[in-house]
Image 1 (cartoon, rainbow, N blue to C red):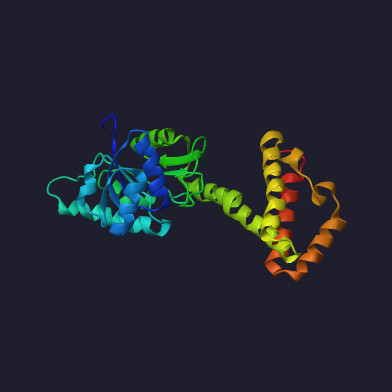
Image 2 (image 1 turned 180 degrees about the vertical axis):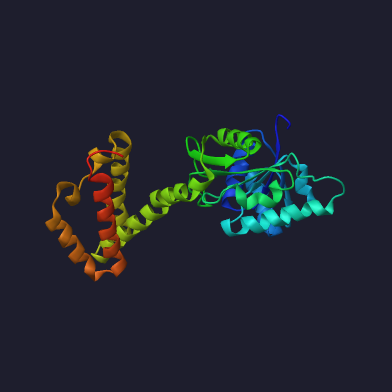
Length: 282
C-alpha cells in the first residue's frame, strides 16, 4: 500500500463528506466519490475538496486501495453485493484481493461485507462515536472510534481513526449492537429528554427561547460534574435525596401531558435508582 493510500467513498452523505474532508486534509488521496445522484456526488466532492464524482458503482473505484462505505445502514448489504458483482466484469483473478473495505455503521459488524471478503478483500468496520448533523463538520478530535475486522482491515482502520483525530478501540463484532445502544442513549435519547423538558416549560408559559436558556445551563453543568466528579457525586434532585413525595408530585403533574412523558419519567427514575442509587460504580 502506498504511503498515502487512495480512498474511494461510497455514499456521499453526512458521514462520507465529513470523513472524506478530514482525511483529505490529512494527506489522503481521494479517488471515486459515489452517490445515487450526480448532484449529491458533486456536492460531496466540493465539501471534501477532492475526488472524482460518480453517480453509480463501477469498476473505477477499484483503482483505490481502500473503499469506505458510508451509505445509510439499510443499504450496506446491497452495496456490498453490488460491489462484489463488479468483479465479474473483469478478466482473470479477483480484483478485490488485497483491497480493504470498511463500513461506518455502528451496530453492524463486518459480516455484512462477506461477499467482498469471499473475493479476497480485507473487511471491517469503523464507527466514530459522534453525531453528524450535516450542517457543520463535527469535531472528531479525541472521539472514540470503534473498530473491528480482519487483521489487515484493523491496521487500516487504526490509521484512519488516528488521522481523523480519534482514539481507535477494538470491539468484538457481537458487542456492536450494545455499543451502539450506549451511544443512542447518550445522544438521541438524551436529546428527546431535553426536548420533552423544553415542551413542558413552554406549556407553562415560557417562550421556547427562555425554556432552552433555562435548561441548557442545567444540563451542561450536570455533564461537567459527571466528567469531573463521576456519576454519584454529581447526582442531585429528589430521587437522590430520597424525596419520593416530590417524585409523586412530578408524576401527577405530568398527567396533563401525553402519557409517554410520565412513562419516560417513571422509567428514567427506575433506571436512575438502578445505576446511581447503589452508591458505587459497577
